[in-house]
Length: 313
Image 1: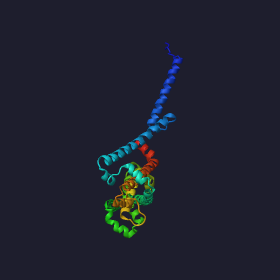
Image 2: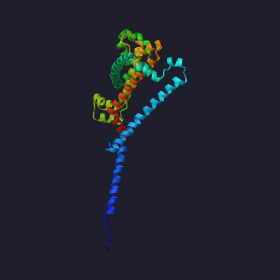
Image 3: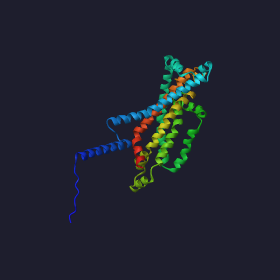
Image 4: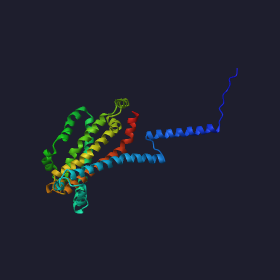
């Protein structure tokens, strides 16, 4: 018995349907590629970049606009003209009377440069000492139990209480300000690095034990690479704290070139409200810039790898 065979005729209509189906499949692949983070080409890539830029910039602009509106409302609606000039001068007066006056802006920029130097030197020292301390504490539980309370003590000790000691030991100039930065910024580096080192998976530890890895190999090839996201998270926190430490040091150590903290106390004493708000804005913008730079550094260093490992998990 012969089984009848069914043949499919290839017609122009079938070829058209096939092309449409292939086009739809390609579109689906492109959509999946965009959703999974793979790079697109042409107009699709440009549109994706424009959307990412809008999602990044528009919230910032909206926040700035809301902040300026609140500032204007407080200045003009809640305060009389006499109190306004002393308590909350409007933003346009801060701009014209202080930031656009070179005689007022020049000492602020000089003070800002000093604070940049102090905060960056203090941050580098805090990062190095914090990572080293965490590595030492991770090597034995008794070391962690003995040293970690002293790290907590550095975090909670009132700086004002130890200012005389810092001044006697490191002088009252730039060295004392750097020490204040280190004291304020070091704890996040210790805590985050130690957490990252201890966060390595037990299965990975078992694999290293199976291959008879040394303590140094386990640390350098497993624990420290796995701790990089935590280390960079601590770096972002410490970078902002180092800026605060520089300003706090200016308040306590006033010898030598003044920093922004010194200028803030001077403007408060002289009731120079426009200059006071301008100095606060400069210090705030510097803090935001430092945090943004180290956030971008974190994304470049471990961002894609960390997101990929989380997605695979």
